[in-house]
Length: 95
Image (cartoon, rainbow, N blue to C red; front, side):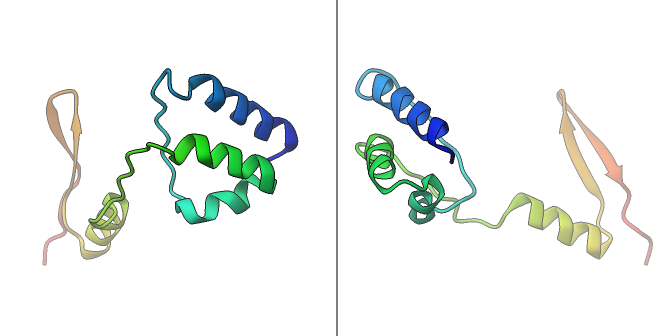
């Protein structure tokens, strides 16, 4: 993060802390966030606001994208749920 982004993030989180909920999603593991933020002092402050009293959930199942890639590789049919209907994206190949 650049200096302005770090300060903006800290200001936003500080304003919301204790008053509003904040939902953060990330593919990056929490233990790598400090390095991503870049500044040790602001990183501590930002992570303190984010993680103190936080409810953390981490997926325990396999990635949906990985499953789709495996299905494509194996030739299985792919489906997509769109507006209440299921659409076939690709039919399974015949053996």
